[in-house]
Length: 220
Image (cartoon, rainbow, N blue to C red):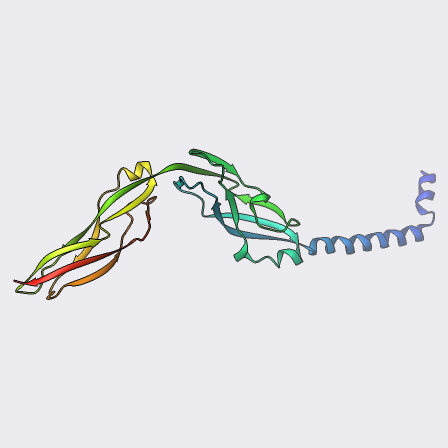
């Protein structure tokens, strides 16, 4: 016990000085490291790239991925959120549902930035083969022209459009009849440009989605 006490008290002043500087050094270095590192949360848009031309993504897909990034303050603060995104390359995708796991490679951020977390990290993508169908475009006439006048003819140009989409929805695609033209009080012929509405969610129109409705009005 005496030897231990002597050992402890021997050069006590120098030992206290050394301990003091060790504490000061530790206290100085540790905050610098923590101050130089910054973590930020981002809600980044998910971009699906290189979808095969004969395929289409159906169903609900995550619009944004919540990402937490960590790195030096100078790097993190220079990041422009509007230029960041999460991208998924679907160039080799096949028909059917598949789960994809996202990681650092799916982010367009500098290599010195660490990805602390991504939510969701795993997303489901359902891809089906595209089909095409030609459908008629028809205008629905409502109202009555002015007294002493009548509608002689109604024509639509183009009279047909081509829809593209999943087979299950293409089969259900009806005539494009959701074009209403009101002729109330009309005394003369007229033309009207109308944007064709897509009847089902995953369908799209190939080519121009504008049609011209020509209504010929004549005196009785």
